[in-house]
Length: 581
Figure (cartoon, rainbow, N blue to C red):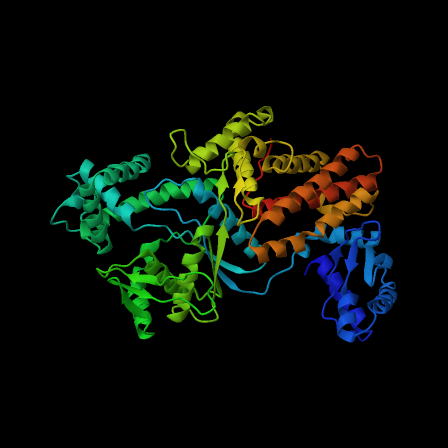
């Protein structure tokens, strides 16, 4: 339990002794710092419940709380708002608890098992800028959820079947007709792929262009796709080889973004669960024929917008991606039995996931208590308000965007402070920080403009600014060159010292809000607020030159708390801190 939450709980016990039916006290940050640090509004609610004058209730509560030496400057404003400030002694004790262990500043969530689906990369296709936000947001939410005490399982959920499989195999056959996998009597023989991951990045767009221009090619692609879905021996074996090559490439890019998954599974991993999925829908009498396909009606009486039925099987009996999503849910339920399943993807997928979730519940594919949740994500656009494009008008690859930010970063950092063999790594770390922080700063479901020049800047609300400040904190602690583990905060100079501690004590509320909203913007804003507050204090005080040894030690200890907090939260956002910059 966090320090402020513990104080709220203890004060609530005191108020309950007065006979008031109060379940909890909540500290609300004051909008009038001249009146107090926090405001307690519970007297207003009690007045409504007890049909009493709230100011009279507030006066009785205040009289009881005045006996607590952790509180000071208690006063009542308006009809019954209680303003309080926390004492210097409280701030000293709180700071030392944080110095001892940052775990003392985290409010755990009720224990659940959460399955998180994000990433959504497609096999044999290049990751593009549209894949960035699901990766960044999903990864940070996963880390936050773990930090708050939940059990988490994550899956990239590759798109590893569909038209792209037919196109890639078609192009491979055109280029390498003698490859063993194309023999009519293929018997499971293995052969090395005659292509690299760089070749693969070019093969799909080439095949796609051919198919769009030539109906005969498109028909061949369709036929190959069907055969792969039917597990044609040669095509399937070759496609599996290509999948492994593509996965290696995709993993490398995700690793650069500090994005990892517990499971690297794709749509085809659900195949063993497809028969049971269809069978469950049949048993519930949900399937009916519509225009040759088998569909499930998902419309409900409360719907105010069109809700079309969900197609489950095509006219030829083949599955579609929604069938595979349902079978994937069944797979996850049988193997992991999660309490909740969360999906992070583009806002435009909301209707689709409503349909899938309804079928999953109606078809008893997942138990009724299991919560299925969709969290939509806005797009990241260029300065013209449109998606990032290459010079030839194509969608920009994620690797190219990362390189652009890296070049911009190199032009702004002092590389003389970094060893030659680490300049590349440092520039990459700063570039990723700039990219990820800019990505996580807006609300999850809002579109926003990404300005490379602005977000790679050393000043302002940027990942570069946060890294530079955090590295400087570490440098100060290193220069002191003594055992920081023996430090204790015994003295505070003035209000700026307390302001840092006040800001630190806000962290649990920020983390809880971010978890509840499934958005990282509050954490990103808080990191900037905490860092700016510390930097103001740093600029006003010559810490290492301070002649008051007790005060100097307290300031270094305070620096360590801010450094550790920044390190914790940057890691939660998936941002690495370089050694120097």
